[in-house]
Amino acid sequence: MTGLVVVGASLAGVHAAEGLRRAGFDGPIHLVGAESHRPYDRPPLSKDFLTDEQVDENRLVLRPVAEDGALDLTWHLGTRAVALSNDHGNVELSSGETLAADGVVVATGCRPRRLPLSTFEGRDQSDVDGVVSLRTLNDARELRHRLRSADGPVVVCGAGFIGAEVAASARQLGCEVVMVEVADAPLARVLDAEAGMAVVDLHRRHGVDVRLGVGVDHGHTDGGRLTAVTLSDGTELACAVLVVGIGVIPNTEWLEGSGLTVGSGSDDGVLVDDRCRAAPSVVAVGDVARRPHRRFGGTTMRVEQWDNAVAMGGYGAKSLLAALEWRGNDGEGVVVEPFDPVPWFWSDQYDRKIQFAGIATDDPEIVQGSEGDRQFVRAYFGDEDRVLGVLAWNRPRQAIIGRQLIEAGADRATVHDRLG
Ligand SMILES: Cc1cc2nc3c(=O)[nH]c(=O)nc-3n(C[C@H](O)[C@H](O)[C@H](O)COP(=O)(O)OP(=O)(O)OC[C@H]3O[C@@H](n4cnc5c(N)ncnc54)[C@H](O)[C@@H]3O)c2cc1C
Image 1: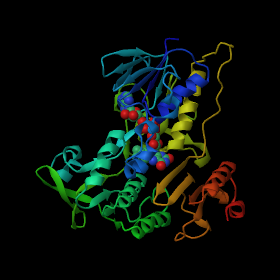
Image 2: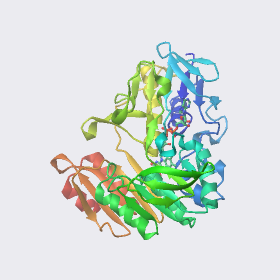
Image 3: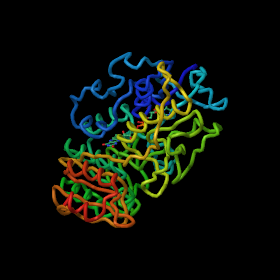
């Protein structure tokens, strides 16, 4: 084999590279990453990296690459893949180099969605001093500095998980925080309105001014520096730092013309089958990949969660080797079953660990405690009373059991019995 190319040097890509080595693949592996940093973990960036100046950036380096040389990779950091050509046999790089590939792992993740240009009189938000999105280590360094030196209110636009975690971190740093959310309840798409309102209550109790049903309409600047924002209801708020957390867009532009199925809008991402395959010699993994979820009626979804990127990266590696009919030194090939784990994520806000497994449905029910409590468990049911989702609020053990119950297709009575 000439070699394999992994595009995207972050969580899913690094776990794919590790998965290839674990499966015994000893040929060349190229790891191409647009960022120049050694691959690092993103979850701390909205949490203790912001609140604790002592967090050592070396601690963020992803485990599989923390020991230099362990995976024997050919690194192309600070380099973008710009095209996948020649019937997927070539990966063209921004450096001008072309890598010949027997197989390709697409793991290019997502980038933050930006406010429309009209918000800042035709300027991009990145050209306005004081406006920040959070995805990368560079973003987090800038945000950490800005939160510490803010001489006025911090406005967080979007009360999704990233926005809510940043709001919590900013409050812990003593900032005055206003969080605005265009929906009537945050997280209604991921959880449900009632659970979203529990998040709102948590923030209000910690002194965040949460405003629902309004967005940021436009920003006011003085000498290029943000000074205030006007909300969609006409309210003007002084603003030293505007944090934009309004969702993400998958990084798929480089795949234009490649022949892979790349969706847009609510179908965005690289479409893969239940073995993470986008084409005979290409797999896509992590946040960028849209896969069918058989246990949830076969609907295709992108999962923007840490656990998914790790699991899908490792699985995708094996699936690629199986598709290429690669055989190890012992002559054994790789066999994979369809990939269909129950998605799972956590979010840390103040002293709360919020964990959610599965998907939300329109049939939620409290099974332990109540939404106002420090701890509660909420389950979401589907057809035939089978549990499809579990929200565990400061109940880590219940989160694990909940995931197992979804895996097993448990019914309502069993859920009450095990989680109640
Ligand atoms: C601040 C923050 C906090 C989070 N907290 C949590 C949490 O508490 N719990 C949880 O479950 N999840 C959390 N997540 C989500 C989790 O980190 C992501 O699901 C995970 O990072 C996805 O990994 P990935 O490798 O698929 O994509 P990414 O991490 O987005 O990595 C993709 C990489 O590909 C690179 N790239 C893009 N285009 C190209 C190209 N053309 N060529 C080469 N390289 C390219 C990008 O620069 C990037 O480095 C958080 C995410 C963020 C940003």
